[in-house]
Image 1 (cartoon, rainbow, N blue to C red):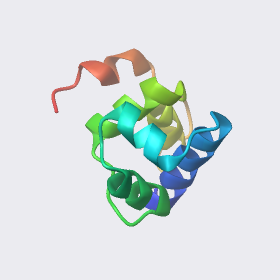
Image 2 (tube, one colour):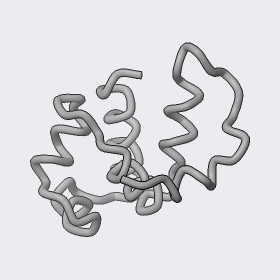
Image 3 (tube, rainbow, N blue to C red):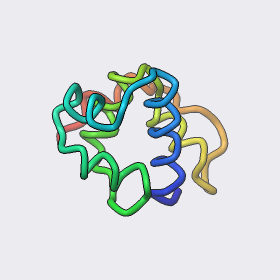
Image 4 (tube, helix red, strand yellow):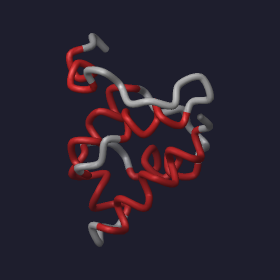
Length: 87
């Protein structure tokens, strides 16, 4: 999945919460420019930040990413295990 697709989903989640990019970035613990670049698809999204944003926005970006890949169309068997992966 391309970075801009997941970035668009991150932006939609942020906007649904009624947050500015600066507010969300501050709460998550990243710079607003890094969050902006992720939302625009201009930056690769490290898995640790994807997990952190999934928790913050209460949206399972990991599951969504998995389902969007061309290879896999069914849900993960144990999506809760993704959070225990080492970074």
